[in-house]
Length: 130
Length: 184
Image 1 (tube, chains in turn green, yellow):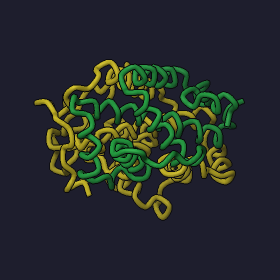
Image 2 (cartoon, each protein chain N blue to C red):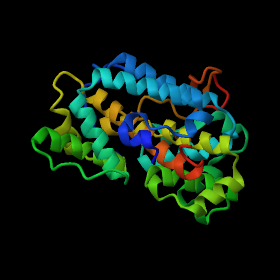
Image 3 (tube, one colour):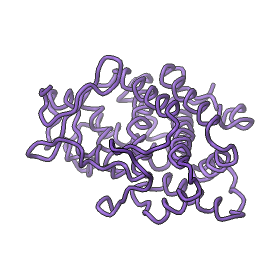
């Protein structure tokens, strides 16, 4: 992993960003907006779950409350096999967003996931971060 | 699986989730448009990548759609049906390698090994590999819709084979969706 990735996983440099600068900048912009509109604790939860599940981060702390457990369950299933995500799991998480922020949380989680997958694959297929 | 998936968030008359941050929606759309504007790969390869993502994520709308440019270049049902069992298929080795990269990206990118990296470099240039990677993330934004249960295809006008064709404008946005390859 690039040293900068260890300090700030949101901004890990990936080689693909050099070859796809326009797309990479657009994904960065989406992440910046996600950080403005999604609760930082929820975003951090998504990040730590993604880091752990995709194999390059420490195991997250056990869920301390129902909200953490419910959101983690959705992010995990999105990562493992979104097709198998059932209604009950999704609805348990969605109930924590009575004002409609669940879709924003899901979008934000996906942006983090996409950046993480790009970084991992870029490292292995394109030589990764210089 | 997909047959039992319900809509999991309040939606408007257009079937889209209510209350989303429109700036975030627009920025995600801008990302997808930027990926589409990159056109190093031929349309058939792009379509195979797109359909593999659609099948793996079980996105109903994505599985109903077909890329018109790819269909014009020969991506018919006989070809695209092979994405489900591509290793045993008659697809070219270049296409098989592209689909191996797709699967690795979707499942365990950390497990990409030197063998796949070598195959990738044998069949694709570095810019093409980069395009495959961003393609997978573009065609996997459907995971958002699958998660929210808003991936239903019931609003699409389909042809007798149950598919609908789509094409892109120069800016990368979707220009047309319809039951025929060339219908406007």
